[in-house]
Image (cartoon, rainbow, N blue to C red; front, side, top):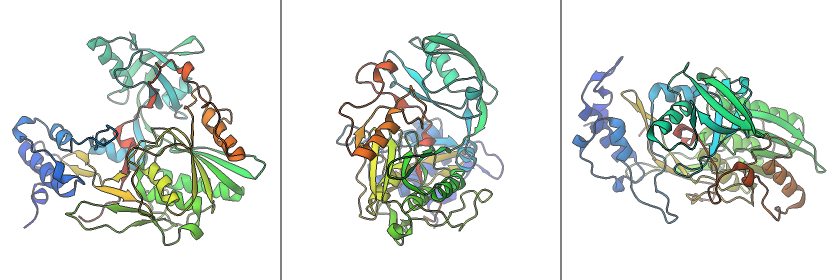
Length: 455
């Protein structure tokens, strides 16, 4: 007999296309059956009364462990959903709805609210409007950023998270004390995950610098092209800027790690072994990948040989926005004795992976697996600590050798010593003491995805 989830799959309260007419209860029972099978901590799932929930998304949001870790964090911080069509656009083509802005801001509830531009997508509405990294947000839709009324907060949120392409909102930012009023119109943007390739001269050879923002299908060919250029230039060391990279495909992380370390260090070695719960068999390990997975066959064919640098050392720029598959790169390289120096902040702490599962127009993400490297290590749920702690420097563009994180990386590489006083610009950010800025990103930017496979 098939499990309940198989019989209930795509039996939907509001069916479309090839979906079958079902009920809300069918969708809730599918969630209960499927995730009771695959959820890593299934024994800790709560017993919920289905009659209390009006939507599958509301039910799923509560269908997770409520345990707290020793550090005080929720054991499961990574439990979310997306409309399936939105998720497919993000993961397959890198298309996102927005203005092309990545924000860095104080945590919810912390006053004063400080929202600053961390990154601007080239060619986006924000770029064309002249916005730059470090610009500080003063108001949205005529509402001051410090407004605490329900109406004011709603107006701010409406502007920061546009509902659809074509929606326009008014913003006032400031740069050097000068107000910058702009009107931004949301669009579906094809984001560029690999940016700002540079060659930096040093006394001991050419150092490559690269911004890598998203482990998605589009990034595969872009990473291969960048590493081919690095190889041709004779790069002897690398600074990989993943300060805002929240993760994505594990196989792409395995490809990136191979391109850094090369075949001698990685051949036949485990990049990441994913461990399921005791209801399911152990999957095959993800080895370091010397050939392309063909995540987007239109951009890069399956089996294409990847370039490699054969480096013994790499420097990675990190913040709490460095998460999931990005952390797998760190852990995987350390598992084969590549020296990995971290400059910046502690990473987010996500040694977990899942397979996105669609049902009735919603794609569900629940932790299914925990990863370990070639040495069997995977205990980093509280994040990887930086070698040198440095604030994200919003007063300089990323890739500028004067930017604090990159400057520290180059200095540490040359001298082997962290700055006596952590470099950064906290006083310029305007955030209250003890309230570090955090990167604003949708949940789908903070993930590790295992390729689809049989249950």
